[in-house]
Image 1 (cartoon, helix red, strand yellow):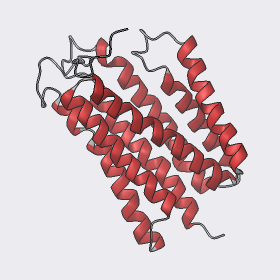
Image 2 (image 1 turned 180 degrees about the vertical axis):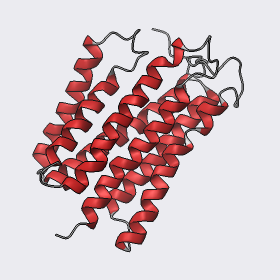
Image 3 (image 1 turned 60 degrees about the horizontal axis):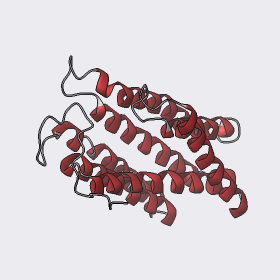
Length: 221
């Protein structure tokens, strides 16, 4: 079996019509939304708590890393850059879910592990049963949407102030998914595509999820 060509170019978005680091300017710059989410929550924690809790600080750093990884992919657009894009996203999703289960639900480590396994299993199942072509390869993210809704609904009675940003993030993430799915379909009418909207709305989702953790950390015990 031949080794993968890690420098092979990837042209998967409306906006990319050529080569070069700036061939996808909107897809590149819109990754600042992830960086902004991490920085804003970090600053809010410093203001509200006087310090940044270790786990929240790590998640803020991961949010920034997601933006940098995605920016790398949308500038270089190669196989290795795609890995640099995907890995931080997966690490962030697993990390934020683990922290949410532990901090918001008080789950012990064993249940956190089961929750993470369930999330991975759900994402794998939806990836297998949802067609890839009509969804523009977005099937893995449907598991994220379901999990986000369940997290918010589970806290609606016990911690309504914490549940609120999570439940706001769910429709925003739905819109971001629609933008990702629409990208190849709008190329002819709108050559810039809609993938940059996926970045912007996802950055908002990152902010809201991290905000929920900050609200919880700020609540009296």
